[in-house]
Image (tube, rainbow, N blue to C red; front, side):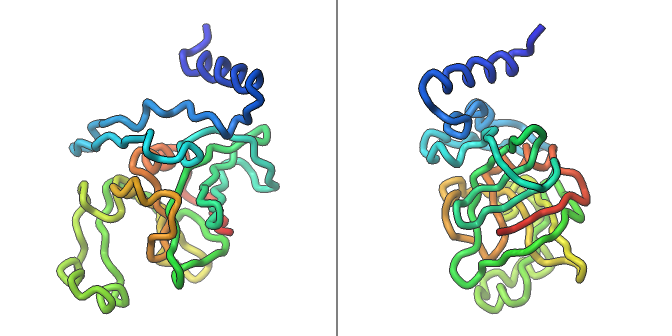
Length: 205
């Protein structure tokens, strides 16, 4: 017997074919942006209808030579792709580094944390002295800049200082807003966290 999600996916795919749409134009995860209880925190719902449709989590066709499980970050178009089998990927909308904080390269996921502590680097505190109170770390929570989850990116030299993380600022998705880290809506980073393995390759382009 088909699961309800399998049935819905099939129905939506058929509708897309009839309408001349591509898979990337349909979001089947809209209901998953509602409020939820997570690790003792009451995560608020996201008014997803106010977020442009292309930034909703969705399965799309995606050509790449990278193997399934690889994360590809497209900083230009503000998409994060988790490569899947059969020429598909799970696509998420993201916010990326503002001017002067852009970067690219290949890293890996070295650690994953739920409701992580955020410690602003010294150079950030220098730019924003009001952050000095968090010099030893801001505890996880609804107002924490890292949101509900964080994936820590390392390269051959160690910690890059960059993260894939959640954000309570859902309206920043699709924009150049961060200090170099890649942010996702909290409901999306929870989904990504559950799918990505420690050691996964991350390519930022």
